[in-house]
Image (cartoon, rainbow, N blue to C red; front, top):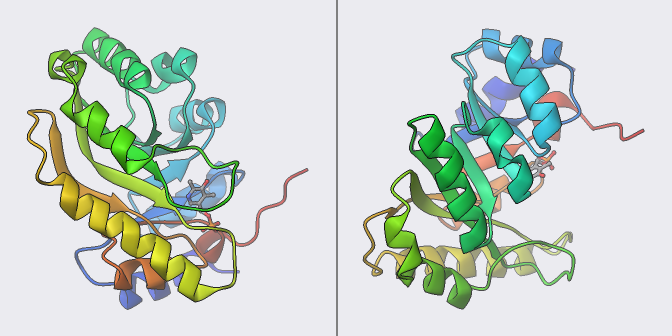
Length: 222
Ligand SMILES: *Cc1c(COP(=O)(O)O)cnc(C)c1O
């Protein structure tokens, strides 16, 4: 398993406008360094504790993406450095991110997570709920956040037609959301696609993919 080779193969196969986030969850810092030394700058983690620990040990030039669901009481730990928070699904969480960002004089970039999969367990908003958040009175006061677009995960299935339909739906929401006018909503990022489905996601309009196992190998959860 060669991390640099895997990265290059993926980068060569995706259009230049698509940003690759290397999902390093459960993987050691040595793997991250190997990817970093081959030119990868953006990494994604889904647990706050793990993210904070790794950030402290690795170069400051790394852009850290929080891709998992974030609990409000943990926002403070990543607020000093996080580059983009993908999995935001409430106005309350946005307010907390705003509060913590202001303490560090930062504007923190966020994406709203939209539920497109049919599974019950996935986090996320309906598109109607997302529109309500973006159009709300409350969001106008949050000067230390900027919502840069939408994120979603397709159903866990081998049926590529189902996956395509879900990605297409999210793309349509993304386009539709551009009509909403709000100072801190600037929809330029559509984060969809993982190791198994990033090609379909790009076909359907994704411009940010979150890829883990295809770069670092299968994860061992022990
Ligand atoms: C783990 C994870 C990924 C990457 O998954 P792979 O299948 O290993 O590419 C992408 N997005 C989220 C939100 C994840 O939790």
